[in-house]
Length: 592
Image 1 (spheres, helix red, strand yellow):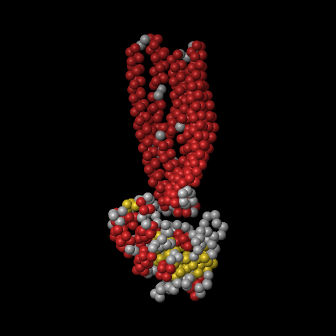
Image 2: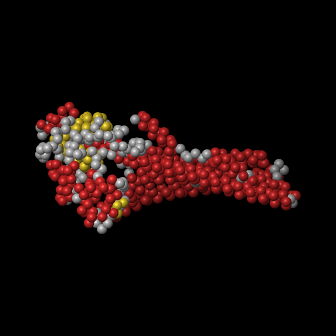
Image 3: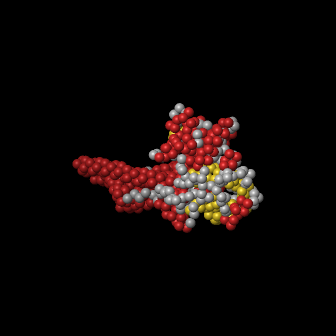
């Protein structure tokens, strides 16, 4: 675990580190700031030498040189922006790819720990970082060190006049610090409110049919209006504070010019500085303040940077399996074993499973029954490795279900959830999960086996019928459920997990499914959560989970050719097989 945390910290530092600018950007920045001295120096020469001496030839040469300087300055700025923008685009691509991969590989429990709107906001934070790393905001930070160059030249030309811009820079820095703290708090509050608003919108869109069927539109609109009102108030405070920061910057800029001219005029009258020197110092003072003043104008973006980094860091902290190409484990038989498994969900004091032991033999069909919330679905998630036990272990052929072989085991575990989820694409693509080659033939065979193909052919476009979140709702619920059942059967997995998968099927579809399972029985290990007698009667063994106890249920007589009952550790399951009321203690403390 310590090694995992260390690796996560190393990956997090890598992701959050800004893209390197390279020596070329710094050299270009140095050249740009040196070229910025051209205009003040030309002004100095015009006032002190060109005008008094009426040197038109020299004036023409200065204008020509100044034109070259301006062209070089524009060229370097464009090239620098191109390099920085490309680095930011690479950063966005690499970071988004890595973090979305981490998100996809994360455990469902970890993903469900936050609302969808929070995850969406975290992914959008990558755009915020990209805009900063590739925009003018970061270039402002690059230009800041070079203000010493302008202050130094002011000192050379005007001497003590340099104290004016130095003092104004100090005032600007103090004002920026305090305004930035307040603005950062407003931005954090606004981000939290946006998370709530996005989560509400996603939930409303997901349950739009329920909202309409129960005429809940007015109530949902009132809820959104309250969220929007709170968000608007927070946005107003941020806008007012941001405008105040920009106003302060403008006032300081004007005050700097006035003070430089006023103090410089005294030196000109005293004879210690020329008129050209005063004009040059005025331009140099404005140029020295320019990075800070521009920074004030994008202060909102700068303050939101820390918030975006924190959001990306939260996504980066998700644990996931390495994104490597999984491989089938040779000789996998499909023996599922629970050995002294203890499990509780976060926040529960009482364990849902307490030293639970059970073995499901190769090719056996086990049915799980019992009231809702007593851990049946939890057992399936433990087999899939989506959940890890607090103590004990869950293995498939002695491979830890939630350990390093989890991705490889997943290739031989097929799971059918109680609610059908279809993806944008055709019915065939949903059956094959967008695979090609042999997967197409296997998907068609699975659909044919459970009688689904007959219904698909009745559709105008057959297997090519487009399915999406909206269109899939137009398909019958039973058909959608059979699509995901066929999708699981097409994988030819060694372990098949059913979680109330046939609850929504009509009698004909259920009969066709039972016929298919009868053919597959013995070729794969099947663990099914169901209350339908048709599936329970087919099972070799029925385990009832009720009020924290698991016992073999003999209400349904198993087939004569069923395998020998699987034995649990320490002989508990064997004892249960000999007596219908021999119970194994389980501490129930949460929902399945």
